[in-house]
Length: 249
Image (cartoon, rainbow, N blue to C red; front, side, top):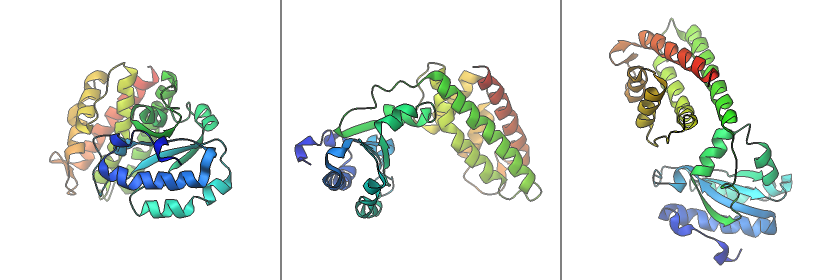
């Protein structure tokens, strides 16, 4: 790779730049002209990157992605993992274009928060349909609803773990909340607490159910000084209401 062909590296955090640029150069030496595009996304592409803590997430887009391309990358990727460079997503343009309906949120998040470092800018022109986002969100919400009910039946008599279940469930729904805000043609916040408040206001849900779950950092089987089972019932009612609303969007 000609070092001059690497672009936008000045937009990277100094630690990301110091670790990822040599990694990119080694990957380019291996794959040559088969490599179409490389970009980082997520925290490594924004202000939320935490040195020594955040992973560096990246996508390598290939003209042709045979098994040998993966195999020849193993040593470089293994060394990169030691420097908090997560194993990259290896894709082709055809795969991306044919998967926008299956992974609409993932590709939308990449489109809105990435830094192109090499090759062709393939994300900016992606068209992700609102109906695909809506359907994905509905699937996720209804799936979480089933899972929380099932988990309660499994451990409800013991209580232990129900608080963790609520926190895990809510945390996994926050990206869904962000994209439902988008469907209402509003700009979602980046900070999780603000996303919850904004989402509840737009959809008429009770933030006093969601915010205490997000804020609680103890493991005493209580949220907002209430028994976790009491809070679980409130949470389920809110998710049931949301599932019905998303179905009608």
